[in-house]
Length: 145
Image 1 (cartoon, rainbow, N blue to C red):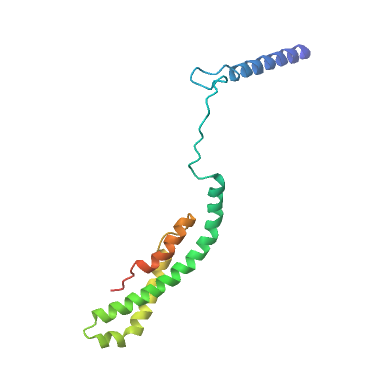
Image 2: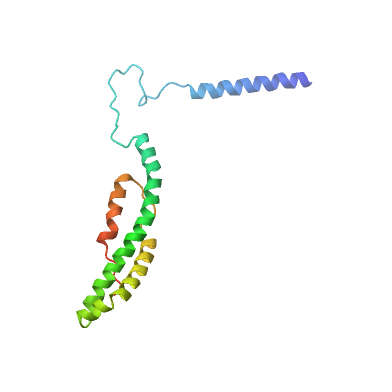
């Protein structure tokens, strides 16, 4: 009885694998590939290559490591500058703004550093974006007033 079951199981397994192979090896559909077609195929290579994608991913890690301290430091400097300029402008007399400038500069540096931490982007995605984000702290004002 055991041998008969094994032979029936082997026959059923062979029939199932043959049926699976036949269904996957069927002839191509009329709208599918034609092996007798000799027309040249045009390949679209306009998208980014896989090497460029991997290269951008590898380079973006050190770019992001450079970007974080840079954005915090430049935002602090820009915050200090904007605070002193705003203090001189808002003061009743310019000399009062100049005398108070160390205090407003310190407040602006702290405010700018905090703004630098929360300023985006947190991750530099591509090399082209890296140049754009390096100029960002110098063109975006950080007003304290």
